[in-house]
Image 1 (spheres, rainbow, N blue to C red):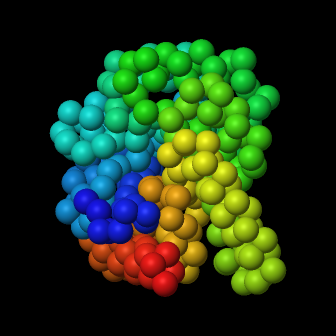
Image 2: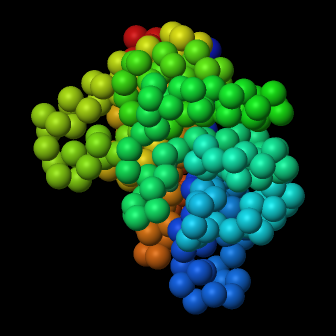
Length: 261
Ligand code: PXP
């Protein structure tokens, strides 16, 4: 798919279905089924699906990954920590992409970006084995140029910019912080793109915060989960994804207009 404008590529939407599994696991059993949510997401306009297999299996299970990989027939982005266990699972299933994230047992969600600079020695061979297996490897990092530099050095194909701090500023309606965080993300997107990395973004995005991120022409994929699944309680999953897709497309069209003006 294309926007028809060569300098502003199509913006893909990856829907993170972790919290469908969170609700399922609250009662055990199989309902609601993350695979069903994944298929519905694709019908509603998602280009792929993201699932985070956590060390403690608090939401997505090994069986979910197996089903998603065999039955989705669309890109699966497997989010995971850089552990030996996760490497084995990724190498067995060979998803389209792996997004490496930091993981702490007590955290409610991924709290900050991966420190690729500090973790260089461990991450370099880890990334290499996945890339050699034909998996696209993405590093989930804060908007910091040094993190992008080292991500590229160790052979990652992609960086995903952590948008959490920006999104929190939007919720608090702190205009100065919003602008400061946006500027960091803009700089990072431009810098990483210049390094030849594919640029993604995500974490905390909502209908209110997605526009300025979707406008950035270097970003080619957004990964969005919690808000879409929460909003589905009120309007249905199909409607929440369609509305997000429409907001992304509208922002992208504005970016095309700005480029060609
Ligand atoms: N990208 C990454 C790397 C994440 O860890 C998460 C959260 O699981 C997301 C995107 C999606 O964030 P949210 O659920 O807040 O939309």
